[in-house]
Length: 83
Picture 1: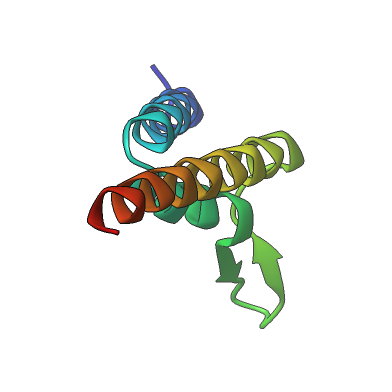
Picture 2 (picture 1 turned 180 degrees about the horizontal axis):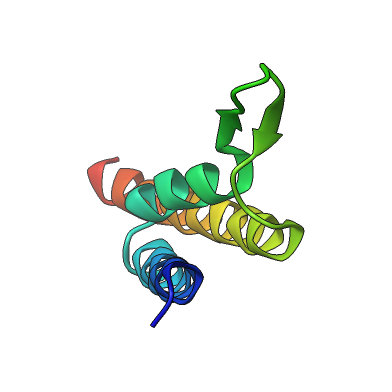
């Protein structure tokens, strides 16, 4: 197993976990989605690039959107019980 295979496997697990957390409660999924969609790294020459591929970043945006929607829905339902 090469290093890139392990990275791909970890990324797939992170995407799966992001969707699961986004559906179950939202907030952790929002953080995972934000990480996947926007994480950047600085190269030795000073150039700043995204850490993940375009496809992974797209999945991150989906997770971020789903997590936000679920979190807002749960918050509205919880507030509805209070009032």
